[in-house]
Image 1 (cartoon, rainbow, N blue to C red):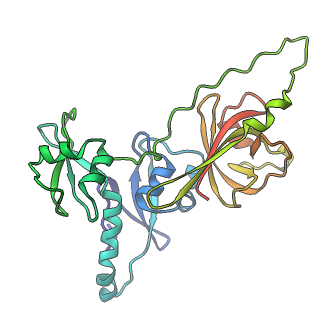
Image 2 (tube, rainbow, N blue to C red):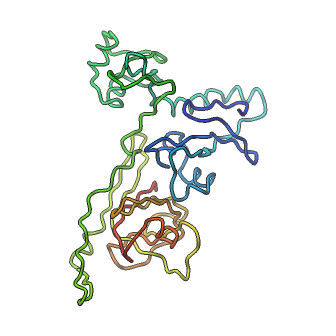
Image 3 (spheres, one colour):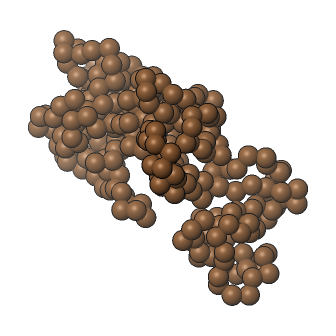
Length: 296
């Protein structure tokens, strides 16, 4: 393990590579690049830059390198930076719990956490937490281990991370199957529905970081200008943005890098993807419905 660094509870270890320090993270079920970004407080683009193989997706059991800041060589400087390092560890670990032999979920209280914030995190009432722990007032001490849930299935040795509401990718919404045109007639377009297909909204977490989500149509980039990478053209996302594209017809997901502006005049067309990304999405039509999400 590299000097000056402490591995997070659910990380595999620390690795030095080309003079840089990385946390080795083993991907758990339901984890996404967004979840790792929030968990380690590292931009998605930095994670993708450190792991070229995750430009399309991450897989359960895969080891992903998370870049960390390199500590200074001076002992005095290292000592001065220790609180900041501990803060980083706490930020990622203050949403974890363990399960004891009685099936109780145990949470170690971190700085600034309250009974109310823990009740929201674990979806239980403040009164239940107070009753389970014989707490008579609303104060809790940092470092205290308190019960935040009952009836867990089995004890755990390693801490279990509690994802925030926007970290888990939900199942795609049910999509009405497109009507199959009669073979003797050409497929018809419906201009009246064009402008209503493009839907955009944004969400913000507690720290104020926003994630933009859009729903609309996707097409492939001109094959003549294509490359063997996961790329995209988008109307508003800045060049270099790492964007998730989900095919709403089959739930397939790919992560792409925005390389330019989409100039198409069709209001319902929100993204063009490279041939490699198109194939990863298993698209069966030239135009298909997608949901894109990214952090501006």
